[in-house]
Image (tube, rainbow, N blue to C red; front, side, top):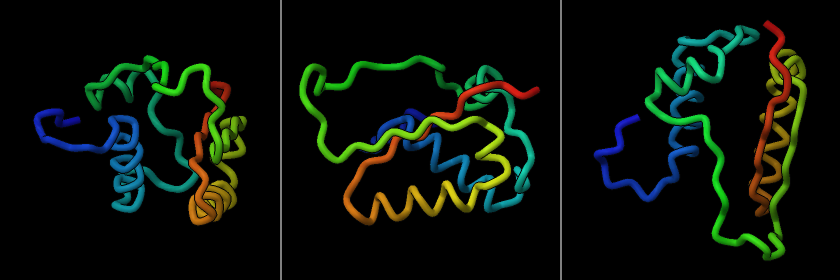
Length: 103
């Protein structure tokens, strides 16, 4: 990721945007496995780390978290994308986590 630009967009959002663009451009085909997380992080020049948000200890309203087996995302991407779209349009923030490594 190019961190030299003055972007107000969070890094994780930039990563997600880039991956969506690459899917649309055909770099990754539907049903194709993405690179392993550690490899993808290396390719994009980002860490795999997590962070503590500013709202630690505060109740977060309007946040929906979904943790799904990787096979669900691979076989039903339109279902997950649709759920994300509907929730975002309704004003919710969506955090999507994929569990498991089916390699």
